Image 1: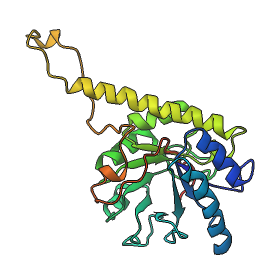
Image 2 (image 1 turned 90 degrees about the vertical axis):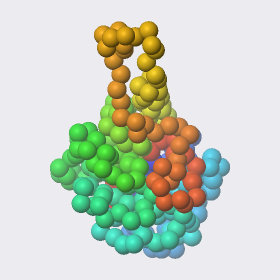
Image 3 (image 1 turned 90 degrees about the horizontal axis):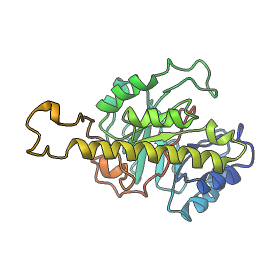
Image 4 (image 1 turned 120 degrees about the vertical axis):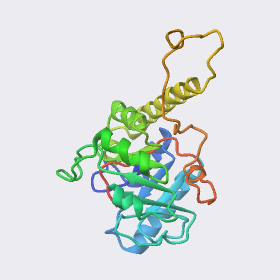
Length: 254
């Protein structure tokens, strides 16, 4: 997932998003809340057209979907969420997670210190992310200060179903290359966890008679796969959106 910020983007938003989509991004959160509604709605139409070509989703920050069917809400509200096809919410602690009702996913932030909001936090770091991901009733996307493949992999290993970024794409000289690098890191991390989990649930052969003869295994079973969807695992029974190849939304809290 990519969050937009035209003020730090190196080019017009439609061009930056088109380049990111070329690198594998499939979910985009339109922020730009300071724009007049008419201008923001026109931008939403333009970005939806870019994402429609690859089966992606445009998610609008705030309760107004601007003619679409997906919104991302702040932790402060509204409650309950508007009745649209896909609803996300920004969360930062366990108390906010307990307030969830019909949301399909959440972003957990800030995982790392951010350039967009220096001093915002304190950061969860991967340990805090893992704790909140375990108690969240819906799939979680890591958000905040995520810019490197190593950070993406660490978030997946901590239990995040996806990764959300802002600056890593908006500030990139080549958004396609940046998105490709992060997307590949995401899929590689998911593949490793999936393979480890599959090994962990493989029955132990009868020829292994002592613990010393069996290989060491162990992994939490909540491993996302490329073919899964966030809403499919959220338990709310809503229509399932196309799978996000890269969940990237850093530094931008809704």
